[in-house]
Image (cartoon, rainbow, N blue to C red; front, side):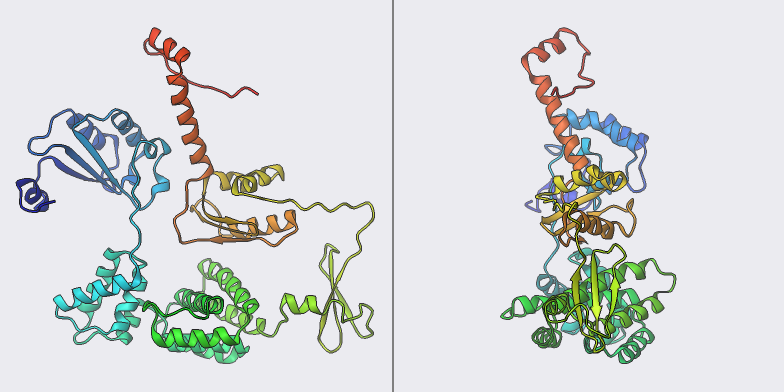
Length: 468
């Protein structure tokens, strides 16, 4: 845009007769869409095109989408539609398949911080760098959310905006105390961990946010463990980065991964709990005592060193009789494999990709889980032993855990199912619908069928099946 012509000035001042915007969150019905459809046939008065912007388009009703579909299939040459949404998966596949999709990516933390700093200077607001970093992280890459939080911080502060006031505003945990909490957990000091959490809670920290902050610090420490030469990009406070590096040198990868798994599981428990405070306390106790437990590698190492019939030992069975653990009087442990009968055959199922995984649940008779995997799951990443995805609100909270457990039981290898924050691809059902629509178009364009459709006006393909 040049910014000087009549079209640019009119659009900027929100008075252009050919650029029309509709908020689908408040106008969701068929009648609202019919207003657009009726006006589409008229040519633009000033500009080259008539532009219809529909914000929050996913809020339109099913009938409204159906009414709009015909116009999208055969749009007039002088009309352009722009749909904006944050919930792409709620839009029917028939609409998505007729649109060009542009995903607006999240803004990186360092770029966001610089932008907020420039805004603060223009507003004559004094704010320290740590506060800017906290606001940038809390916005999760959204400039609109970041500016809203900055505006809130400025309005609530009578003088300079400090890290302490920003922590209170956002309901965050004091990072210094939070890292001390992580240290006590790693040392197995449950009492000290509970005391620090009580202080954080008294200072206004949200229990769920505390668990999320622990997850972020665990992620930072694990990342530094894997990449010891990683430099701080500026998106993490220097003290937090330094202490994360210290922990990465002291803690094992086995402990960090177990800590991450327990925090992720605990986060779900906190969400579903009626009392977040005591749920987090119980989680911290479990995490503290976990540091005293031997890792799977240590248990495996003791396999040949501890005799199974050691006097003074007690045997604990798993219930299915598959694995037995012998614990002797000194507290060391050994794993003993239960005997396999000669008539038993063990077959390990190999899952190579996501479609095979989905089909496996159908073969095993898990029809409900199979249905959710087809229609409610957007795959982010797949690799043997690990699957990351987004899930809709239709599936239960323990869905990921059930997927991981079933895969582990069926394949004989450990599987982890993770609910990701990243945007996933289309669901299996959406892909199938698009493929079916494409095949239908190919059939319509086939010479023999095209002749039939031309010979009999109004005829259309209502159903087709692939022959074996």
